Length: 249
Image (cartoon, rainbow, N blue to C red):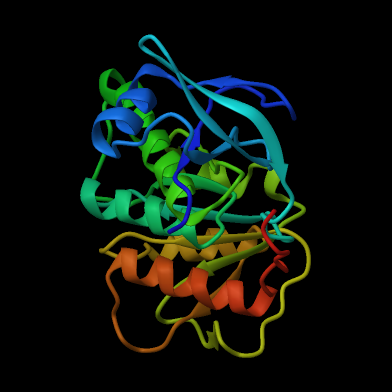
């Protein structure tokens, strides 16, 4: 049975000892019913994984001494998913499964036909929930880096964002003449832009093309937004190649 994994929100060091947060300690002790002396794995989101032994010290759970694990590698190509806001449960599905598929950054988009707008008063709580979802997905999928989750951004702001100018940028559109599967082999970091259930406004597609985005299609079938996003991510992962794995320590 694979060792259980836990996230620690501070930098870990070889031979050190980590203290689990109260919620993680509760999960280890009362949900998973793990006991002192058992082995678990930790990650801190910096790209490294560690293993260690459970030590119970009063109400606290300590893990150590920590041994670095060399087996887990981040994808070799940076992959950003800019996805239009959709119904909360479906957008959270994109976050969870996109994390499993190697997305490095998530950029929620406000578009012309987005059915969802997040009030400023609720944004902090929503961001906390999104970040918790990607952390949990990292634990499940054995990732050692945690994707960034940005605050919602208007499409126009994304198209002019200078930090993404070095990226090979794609916008998924069902009416595009070029299929996503037509032998595309992007080089360098990649940004994939996926619209809402209502699709893109014509002006949005034109603005993306003017900004240097390649407009590509996944065929004539109309897919749900979350289906299109995850199918496209799987295709890009195949085209980009998967990182090699080493034997576990």
